Image 1 (cartoon, rainbow, N blue to C red):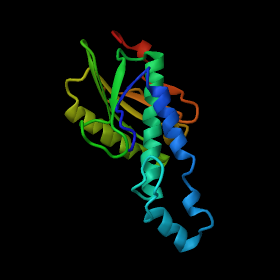
Image 2 (tube, rainbow, N blue to C red; image 1 turned 45 degrees about the vertical axis):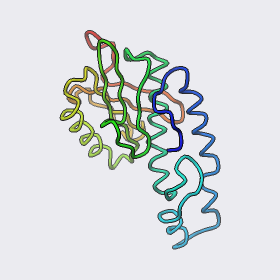
Image 3 (tube, rainbow, N blue to C red; image 1 turned 90 degrees about the vertical axis):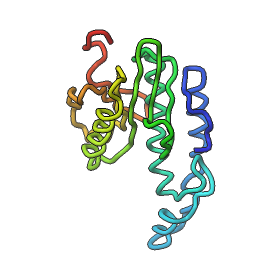
Image 4 (cartoon, one colour; image 1 turned 180 degrees about the vertical axis):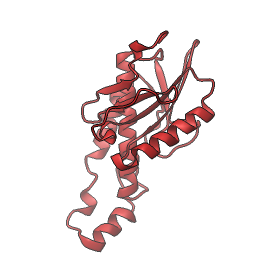
Length: 190
C-alpha cells in the first residue's frame, strides 16, 4: 500500500483512516459500462492505476482494501477503548509479510500478536482456524493473541469464546464498532 506508516496510535489513526477512505472514492470507475467478458477481464486482469493499490487488479485491490479496513477500524477501536495495554500497534497492510504477523504491539509488561482478515461467511471457519494455528505455532511467548475479522463473516452466529487463548475481535467496518470475545473484563489480569 502507498501509505508508508505502519505504527498506528491515537495521534495518527484517524488521519490515516481518512486518507485511506479518500483513496477509495474513485475505485470502480474503471469498470463503468462494462459487462460480460470485458467486465470479468477488467476485474481480474486490468491494473487499477489509482487508489491505495494502483498496481493490482480491482479484484485483488478489493481483497486487500477490505482487510485493511478491518485493521484500521479494529485498531482505532482498540486504541480509543484502551482494551489492551498498548499505545501503539504495528500493522501490515495488504499482503505484506515483513514482521510475521498482521498486528503486533509491545510494552514493558506484555506483547501482542494478531492476524486480521475480511472474508465471506463461507470462508470464515477455514480462515479463522488457519490464523489460530499460526498464532499457536509462532506467538508462543505473546501474552495477548488476537484474530480480527469483519463482523459479517460470522453470518449472524455467536462467537464461541474458546479460541485457543486468542481474543476474537469482530469489526464492523461501517460503524467502527468491535465485539471482543471473550470479553476482556471476564478474564483475570486483563
